[in-house]
Image (cartoon, rainbow, N blue to C red; front, side, top):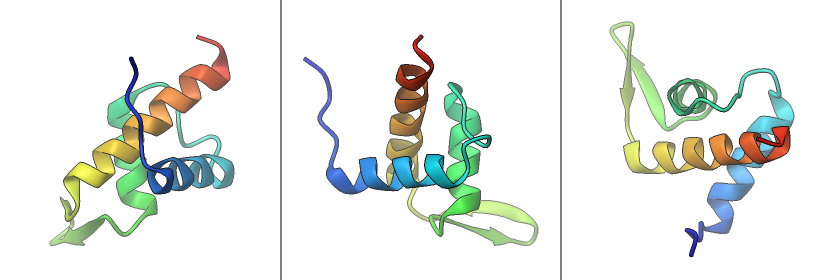
Length: 74
């Protein structure tokens, strides 16, 4: 059985991929950084990214990674 994700997680991930198709790949850590840059889930404090909603950012990045892998056919 697979994981069932909420619609808002899927919607945010797919919208980010549609708007920034070259920014996302099959790598979770890269996708997590991009999600934090492109959304308001992280804030920059003293030049360093601080995650405000870590669990939500991880879930969106995880779905984006899975989505890109399926889209790519791997």
